[in-house]
Image (cartoon, rainbow over the protein chains, first blue to last red):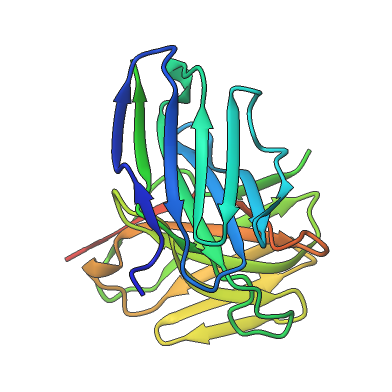
Length: 119
Length: 113
């Protein structure tokens, strides 16, 4: 398997523009997570899905952020309109629930990230 | 308030020594604690998981301890090598947390020759 795939790897945009980040999870995984990482705040969970259904979006900073998972192999994170403070590295991760006794319970596999710069 | 604290200062050690990284948490009752490694420009990579009822877990040169009374996990790398240089993140999964992880800010480890 190729692992979690994210695109684009780098995105530079101007304030006010719409940004769409894409993620393809590992085939067969039933959980998908979107994170944001900055020096100041570290790695923050934005939203996660189970079987394509959003479970917890309490980390989404505001209404400018939205995420969708139309099928098991694709998810998007959209920022509209973008602002300079949205500049960060955005990671997508996926996992397979192995049950509470699994040795690697909820091990998350991360993609390479998208580095977003909003000017 | 809930906090996960890792030493924000970088840890520099000499090759061959044991590196010990600390993860302290407050106002959490984690069911599981995980450790990840992150290299510059890459996503975190899973290393080890330890359950709340386990005291210690080992994997090759890695050892993790979990003290729910002290609310602390220690992560040890024995016989450290320059290739172990990276940032190490601890992450908590709460009981009934729906597989959601909350990450610490990470500690940067540098192993020098």
